[in-house]
Amino acid sequence: MPAFKKLRGQAGQGLAEYALILALIAIAAVLALLFLSGTIQSILSIIGKRL
Image 1 (cartoon, rainbow, N blue to C red):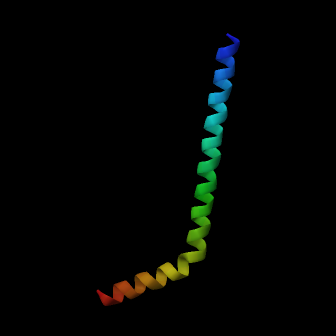
Image 2: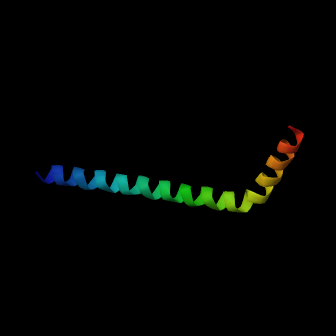
C-alpha cells in the first residue's frame, strides 16, 4: 500500500506541473497578443485594403 500512495502523489504532482505550465503558456500568449495587437491590426488592415 505505501508504494501505491507514493505513486498517486507523484501522479498528482505531475498533473499540477502540467497545469502550471499550461497556465504560464496561456499568460505568455495573452501578453504577446496585447503587445502585438497594434501590429497585427495594421497588417490585417493592409491585407483587407488590398483585397
